[in-house]
Amino acid sequence: MKELSIQKENFSLAENLQNIFENRLVSISCLSEKDIKNDDPSLRYETYICSEKFSQTQGGEQAVIAIAKKLRASNVMIINEDSTSFSLETSLGGKLYKINLPESTRAKELSISDNFGLQMVANLVKTNNQMVSGSDQSIHLLKLAARVAQADITVFINGPTGTGKEVLSQFIHLKSSRASGPFVPINCAAIPENMLEAILFGHEKGSFTGASTANKGIFRAADSGTLLLDEISEMPMSLQAKLLRVLQEKSVTPLGSQQNIPVDVRVIATTNRDMNTEIEKGNFREDLYYRLNVFPLATKDLYTRKDDIIPITTALLIKHAADVTKIPYLSTNAITKLLNHSWPGNVRELENVIQRALVLQSGNTINDEDIIVDVDPENIRLNENIFKNKHELRLAAE
Image (cartoon, rainbow, N blue to C red; front, side, top):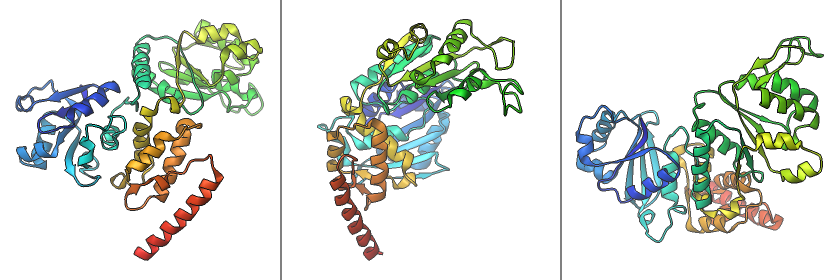
């Protein structure tokens, strides 16, 4: 079953949407009117997308729903490309989206990655393993990660904080043969050193003070799936030798037990540090590094991949909007401000900025003054006045 079908008749944005989904490695078919007239039982999709113009040629919304049922599609999107403003509404328990896009969405001079309307449609589509991307660097990384996912080998992801290492790890898991198994992340820096061994490998009842019950541990919890060792560089040296043995022997020995228990786990490790430097300083075992670094991948700072900024922004708006039908539109000036910022905090900083913008925006539009970055305290004071003025205007309107 493919994830998505797009009806190409009377739909000028169909090709651009197809391009976005193909770059995100979403399985997709572009259908003709002839395709939907044939009752082919092999046609089965998660989502069916068509234009409002096509909907009218078929007899309206109910006719489109009937086509979707014929295609065994669970979700339907009807896109109006000729609206004066952006809006969306849902019905059928969130299974039907009707999206109005302003005519400017079709402007040829607007790049696909910076096209807010197109990216919003793409991110509203429900898929199991879609990863947001727009830049050539991210598209290349996704394609490489998808190939790596098919090989059941250990992966080592290096990259700055906030650049999506865990998201990429989940993508690899969902694209692998282990997708039906568990994905278990653990942050090696967030767990006390004296507890990490028991949490990773498990323990027997009474094996240490407070161990009132046995626990199978993270490795066994991830059996038949994927284990993410986040910030692996923070793992204590005393535990690194034990981890190396587990990776070599593919078995764990719980604390307080003499029994080796086999585990079938794919390991993905991540770090934001220069591992060669960590090895030279004596902070990380070289043999463990080479055991983990079977296939290296790297994530990059957000400022080096500006074509990802608007696709990620639209995904964050969907994530944080209190009501999906009231997602605000990004003005051209707001988009320019987002693209021109250096994003030292990467996606985590962008997420903070978007949450602020959702609070500050009015009139269902995010303008440039609603985009507050962290670097300038004077800028924050200025925007506090803007927020005060907007609040007073809202009260006056009420």
